[in-house]
Image 1 (spheres, one colour):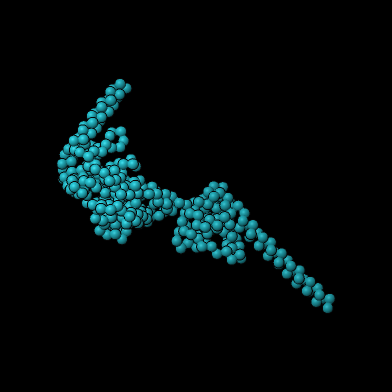
Image 2 (tube, rainbow, N blue to C red):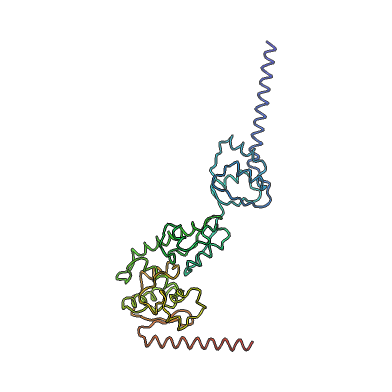
Length: 350
């Protein structure tokens, strides 16, 4: 009987020791999971689609951001922690604990970059900005406009004007086509909404014509308060069958031949975009117009103006008659000559 009691005591002691060891092991795993990590500097990690937690932890250990990946995985199994890791690029702060790293993954705190498309940018310039951004995957490099539009699911569309100028936020490594798709969808949505609420009796047959007009307004002025008035001039001329005579359309038609100055020859040489030689709107937009220009095209000022010319000091002079307009043009050209002579005298005096 005494031996039996002694055997039971030994079993109880062994069990107690085992429980103590297990408790100590669990406490050690828990400490490992919550203790600061070994990396004294931030670590950037790109989690790709299909990667397992084991693979991610192994890479973190290789980068010096995780000390005991197996122990961390063991603790998570014991606790039933099964996080779903959001793919993307993560910046792991210095000395991040495994618990903090897992929380970053679960919450999807990926690094976000941004690209800003300026109002009045052309589609070619937009593509160049995408291609030059080191955080964007250039999947469309070398493709023609037609191939790009086909890849977007809009084969046959001319791309100019169809992408909304705005700031787009993305994760590093995002393909360029993804950003183009966002910008195209945004412009389609904005254009459709504004067209539904457009002013009455516009001489425009479709949202696309409104987009063309908006692109001309965008290129004609950067003065916010002038957009609707310039739209009014173009609408008045369209109603009367007058040529629009817009310098920016001529410049767009010249393409790489434009050298910063429009000559008389440029104005009289016919191209599809020369609104001095051809009536009506040009065949496509000439840039990516912003919201204010789109609204101006849909709601032009009700005015009797038929002409406008730059003041040379920002903004434009507007005229109802050709005689008044010609006088304003002469005044503008005289101002340009004075400015040029003043600049030459200043340069000679240096």
